Amino acid sequence: MVKACVTLEQDTAVGPRGIGGGDHTMFIAGEDADAKQQVTELLRASGRQDAPDLGPIVSSRGMERYAHMHSAIQFAPGGARFGIKVIR
Image (cartoon, rainbow, N blue to C red; front, side, top):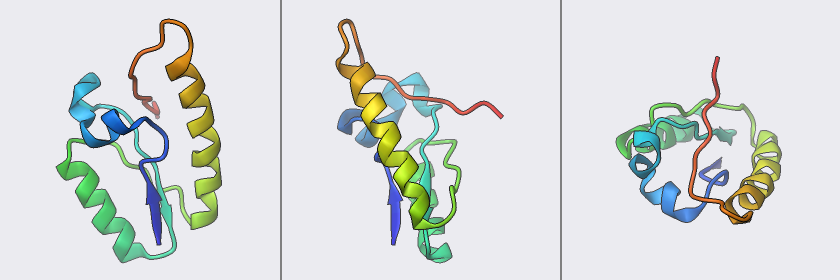
């Protein structure tokens, strides 16, 4: 089991290059290393350059919490589609 693509709205999930050319962060979490590698490859093939592995599936709880904040920003007055970028 792998979880990804929960930290942004659907349009950016299916068309990542529409925001910043796809240069934003998409997190993944899960228990199966092979499945996480396949998801990472799919994300990169769709235009994502940054897909850090947050570890076990329990880490997806943090992604779900962030999704609520992302929605609040998205639907705020004057909000627009956006992505986040983790700077390391």
